[in-house]
Structures are given as C-alpha cells and as structure tokens.
Length: 233
Length: 115
Image 1 (cartoon, each protein chain N blue to C red):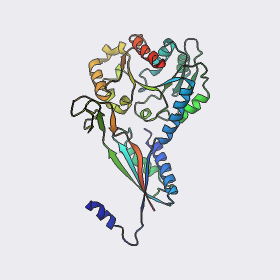
Image 2 (cartoon, rainbow over the protein chains, first blue to last red; image 1 turned 180 degrees about the vertical axis):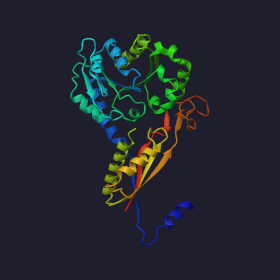
Image 3 (tube, chains in turn brown, cyan; image 1 turned 90 degrees about the vertical axis):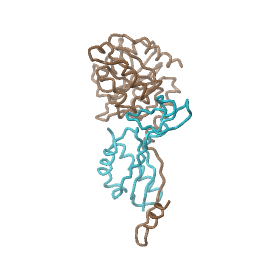
C-alpha cells in the first residue's frame, strides 16, 4: 500500500519512535469474566435466572410481583433501584416471605455483575428455583452488562409508543422475550399493536412477544407458561 | 450513559498493557466501536479528555474506528452490511430481517502506540 509507505517514511532521525502494542481486549471484559463466574454459580445451585429490563415506569415491579406470586416456583428477587419500601413489600409477595435484595446503585444507570455478586451474599437462596433480577429502569445501559442470566426479558408499555424497539435496538436484539405491558390501556393510548409487532419483527425477528396487562391479568397465562417452560428446561 | 466509567476502564487496560510492554508513555489509544455498541462517540471523547490527566495516556490521542453493523442470514448463508437505521438488518437475498449480528457490537481496545 503506497499510503502505508508514506507513513513509514515520516519516521525520521531525531523524532520519537513509537511502538505499536496490540491489545485486542474488550472494554467489557472485566464484567464478562464476573458474569461467567455468576453463570457457573447459578448452574451449581440449579437456579434459573432472568434479567428484566425496561424504561422507568413500564411496570417491571408490577409484572414481577404478579408473575412470581403466580408462577408456582420458589423465587427470589434482586432489584436494582432506589426502591422504596413499598416496592420491596410488593416483591416480597403475598405472604411477605420471598427473599428480596435491593441494590442501591447510587446513580449508576445499570447493574453490573460485581453488584450481583455482592447482592447474592445477602440473599438466602436455599430452596429457590427462580431468581428474577429487576434492572435499573433504562433501555440503553443495561443492555451491555451481562449478569450471568439464563435469559433476558425486555418490557415496554403501550403508553411508550410503538417505536420503542427502533429507538433501542441493542436492547431488543438481545431480548429472549419481550413483554408489552398495560394492554388494558392500549385503546386510550392510541397504541397500534400491529405496528409495534412489525417493529419488533424488524429489529428482533423470532423473539417471543407477550401482550398483557400485569394489572388486569389479561394475557398473563401464556407469559407464565413461557416462564414455567424455561424453569423446567 | 456510562461512557465515563467505560473510559476509566479503557485507560486502566491501556496503562496495564503499556507497562507490560515496558513503555513509559502512551501516545495513542485505538478503539473499535460498533454501530450497535450502545456507546456515544462524543461522550467517549469527552470522557477521554476529562480522565486522561494523571495517567500514562495524559498526552495521548484517541482514535475511534467505527465498525458498521453486519448481519448474518442463516437461511441464505450470507453475511452482509446492514445499511438500515435502527439496527435493522434486512438480508439482501431473501429480504427478511435477521437477528444475528456478525459485527457492529464491538467495544474494544485494538492497539496502542507507545514510547
């Protein structure tokens, strides 16, 4: 390449000589290593782990509280948020005995594997079969951080609009399941279900999509069935 | 976004590799940043300028190589450049959207120039 030769000829006597050091290291490698350790730990404990991600206010806590009460497997939750007592109480379940660990991220926009390690130290997992991780409400940053989970669930609600998948493609491309929540408000929000479905197909073809309302319970059955299949897979 | 945290990690990895190579100063850090890496170039540059003082890279420049999104269609057994917006990768052969990403999610340090 003539251009390369020109570059080389620029090194003249007296100039500092630069050396090239090949690195080829991913910036996320530290988190990826921690996540691999977590994954092994979940396997050994025979716990199925899923990571739930959405914008703030899409209904993660509501979905998880209703889901874990109904799924029929002993569960625990790690919630990354500046969660109030109210949120934690909802996640502790109707009998109030579900183990819940809160991670105060102190302004950090996502959960990292090292935070999960610390949360697990305080979480009694004896007999637990299903661990839900409620990520920080954010559709950008959490996408890049592997938490060692078995699968990822991305949630958005009808009030956020049909184009959510187009705005946050990285998040949706890595989803193993998508939940569209608050379907009971679809008409009031002017939500176009077929447009949303087409956007999901373009960005994340083949991903299972569950159209439901966590609050009314409509559509919850097939979502719970999906979870049960994953638990017994 | 967390570009400052990521850049702190970049500077740490770069300093370690420079030290292992017996170099005192870093003159250039070359990054490969995928179109779908989820990070913003301008924020990375800002974080680099803000964080480099006091590190072996204090006089270094940042080179960002952008990696476009490439999809991979299993049905047609081809890899292709996805020119669509929004992370949409349509196979040029069958016209169907594909989920598999062949390139474009990178966020890595490719090399350093040191003295």
